[in-house]
Length: 128
Picture 1: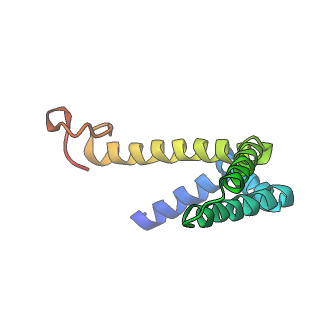
Picture 2: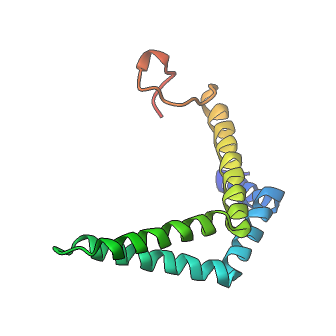
């Protein structure tokens, strides 16, 4: 079996893994959540409004404060939304899985366990 056939098999196996299924479900829920989508759009609009106010030569501090408070409220509502939280958690789990898969592949290529680069070559087994 060739490299690309093995990669294809790995990809299909990963796609069926419960962690990737969870991520796919979380993405679908995220995309379907109209309330969350509305808050994300408003968050972007408010940020743009704040940027526009900040570049004016005569700033209306009361308006800037009002916009900033709304941005803070939206940020809290978005980041505490259960759909948003689930998506972030599912993505983190998949990232960890993919790092483990990549580390396993690198170990089998180099015979060394990958480690974080310290930028001190005396601690390193070779550049990535």
